[in-house]
Length: 264
Image 1 (cartoon, rainbow, N blue to C red):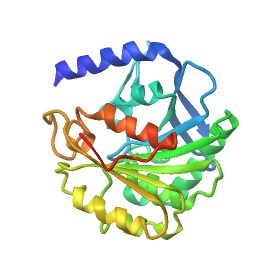
Image 2: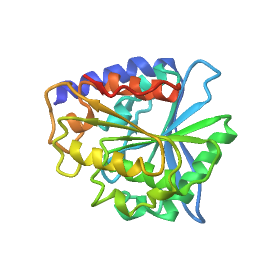
Image 3: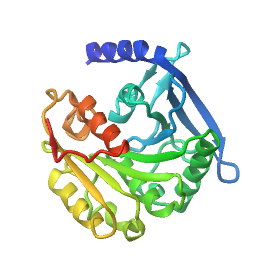
């Protein structure tokens, strides 16, 4: 495990040299509340697409940035930041707001307060010149992406991306998905063994979402031998060993291409 962590840090050290920005920013949101997020953008100018990333778990401490500007993090979205940026996408990884320092519960991810916080973030990005914004969730972060996609009404929001989404009946059914009109891309590993994130449940979510909006679904296969528990990041649940291919599907979909039915 330590050896893998060393490799991860080395790769991020190399790739961050091509970033124009790698910094933690803080913006005010609700009265007395601030929101921290990690901003990472390509070095080349002219890219106007932004991804707001919602890692899984309780979202607490999803990333670390050293004084040298090295970013580390275990979540699929965080450790794949370099791949997104190589595809010309700016990424903004959200941490819990200041009034939830220990993390975001499922209830908070579905709340109007969460939507209000992220609306301030989308406004901030629009002021920075971003013309298209996509909400990307992984695991429990898919609750945020789906709920925000249904609640936020912003012309700059162009789609939501759900990776390793949680069970529909126990999690997503409480979200007003009938109000979701943004196009949706879902990616789920066929061998996801997390007890609350099975491949079959992802298909149920796809069917439910298809009642109100356009949904594309990519079945993911292959990858590396797991180095974590089934619901943790270094497993099929976190697309361990197949991250680059998953990111490429996302980047191509954002660029207007149809998502493949299956990758491996």
